[in-house]
Length: 460
Ligand code: GLN
Image 1 (cartoon, rainbow, N blue to C red):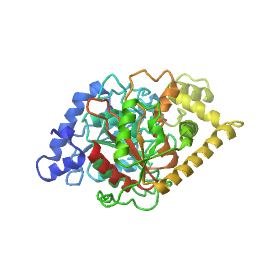
Image 2: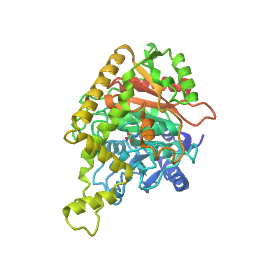
Image 3: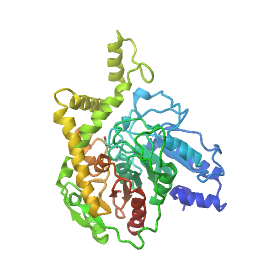
Image 4: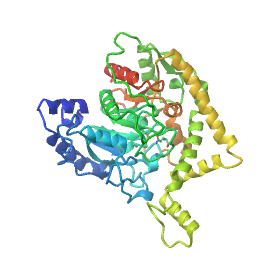
């Protein structure tokens, strides 16, 4: 196998055994990015990392990691895929980035995304769409589409993404790699540009589950900069924990509904029966997407109020007065999807509508958490497809935002309840990629990773 087909844990074994060196691994991946990025558009900024030996001697020496361009890397442009931040430079490292650097990784560059991570196809990036390496006529998914494409194409062995409603797992599913979103509060949000703060979580796009666990163990754990973190230290992942225990697995009945592509339905059914999964009905899940698309825009409208052209970022010229400055800056600086979210968000929070929309959505969120809490008393894991279809073609869903939002049907649940969830590729030979999603109760990340590794061994 060639280096670009190998996961991080094998690369570091090869380096440790002296069969390759950190410098040759870095040079190899720098060349891959150079060859492939022109076509795929996965990176917004490529860093000159081939000769960066600052991590040599440490566990991840030689390993280039790509970072989604809504996560800060000190001294590097941080665009969020937006004209608003086209020329903004980050002034500090995100905690997750700092911990990766401490472990010896080098940052390969900043990956493309839907503007401010709002989208499911990468078509909403100011820097142009990313192509899916599995089929360049199709979207890579979003919003971490650049990270997913970069890993799937072997431009880097692993990447960071962010997942507010599925943005790590959905592109992982579309590109045929592993995508892991930890429990809310496990990875510090310090340095992650806020979209919807009660849902946002940094996650990992990798070639296999072991790499997801490796990056999780390096980056997870309390951080004084993020007050919403779980204060207990994360457990280590024991890959043998399910050897002598049979996990209780549930499969969501919605996995077999007509809106799921037939081949995906079949495949998930086959996996469910091999895992001895019990089919469960949670009719309330029909509300997950509507609840998400009230709460996420509401929080986004508040978080994005800071982009006013005054202190940093894009500033419109030739303005009459202060109000005109805000108006023109935001009109010219934001793209159509971000504007749609801000308008929905301010509407559902406005006097007179707050009770009808925002408060009801909050109650719905609580109801879903209670329902799933009951499920997790009886089951260790809940499985479903990650996505209802494989990757769609460019332009297929941009005209109809609701069809785009429904791409998130199975993924938003984990964000709404703060649970960890992982997507692992399970498509059959010759099919476009798609993933199996496995979700566990909040804080059960280690159990989830251990089980996912066992499932991966069986079905991938
Ligand atoms: N597709 C979802 C959205 O557009 C999720 C995005 C994300 O997880 N960042 O909001």
